[in-house]
Amino acid sequence: MTAVGNRPLICRSSRDFDFADSSSPKLGFVMFSVSICNGKSLGPHGAALRSSFLAPVRAMEGSGTSYINCKADMIRELQQSGFNSNDDVFTDDSNGKSLRQMSAIQNSTNIVWHKCSIEKLDRQELLEQKGCVIWITGLSGSGKSTLACALGRGLHSRGKLTYILDGDNVRHGLNRDLSFKAEDRAENIRRIGEVAKLFADAGVICLASLISPYRKDRDACRALLPEGDFIEVFMDVPLQVCEARDPKGLYKLARAGKIKGFTGIDDPYEPPLNSELVLQQKEGVCASPSDMAETVISFLEEKGYLKP
Image 1 (spheres, one colour):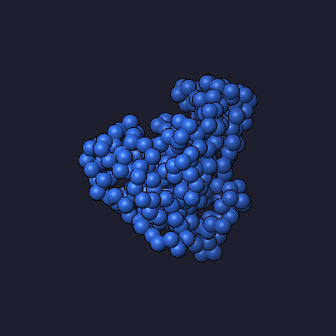
Image 2 (cartoon, helix red, strand yellow):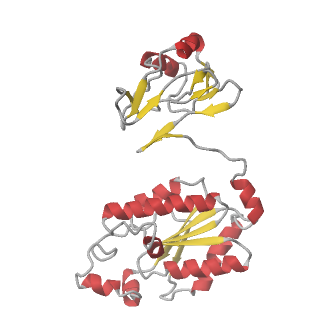
Image 3 (cartoon, one colour):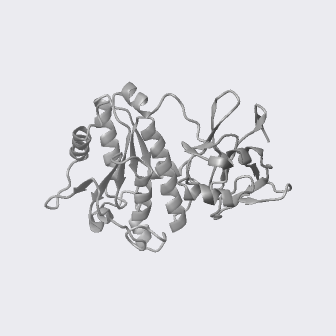
């Protein structure tokens, strides 16, 4: 356990802490040193909290009760007064420096978000563009990767910084441990969504090109970003057209039963319901990749993403 000045370090059990004995491999510690939480006074219990015995606690998934120095009743009183145990809790050390609470996210315990002085707006000003994610979804053979490359070239020629996260390319490295089972496909999308979010936060225009067949997984990625920064582009190309193209020979293998769980054949594709852009054939003719890229670029210009 570490200490700040003459007082122990504050930690909080965000809803996942349970009391544990000292032999537990995952111990945390809880102690308050001030009487302010998110601007709300702890009232007459402040002094009691400072002097309370420091009990070891263990992070437990699914626990709904918060404990501070073994005083769950105190937390209930704080909650009744408007304090939310899921809020951020801050304290000050002996030098007046603000300390942020530790938190637990799934299997990651005792972690603290470290905020830096250079933020997304600063990076966007440097790059003279706004970071976002363009999520290109559709069946295999619908032209997702082709569009992503054409879009990357079009934006590059305008002096804009992009990066393509192609579904197959990412499976060569970051996601090479994942199969094409439903649960692994969901994890594949989750990881790419998190990486895309980092690119957007860096001020980069991220072009994510992958089948992403399940609506709930795409919506979960959308929820990672601020409103408007996730731009879904649906390549609305009929299955028969994609199968006729079959650039990788995968449809032929799937029809022969050599590939199981292939999207469009024996695994579903759930088309977007409210995508920002839908690119489809007109009178049976597909637009050229450069024309489709210009459609997306026009959208970005209209929404202000190509200027700081």
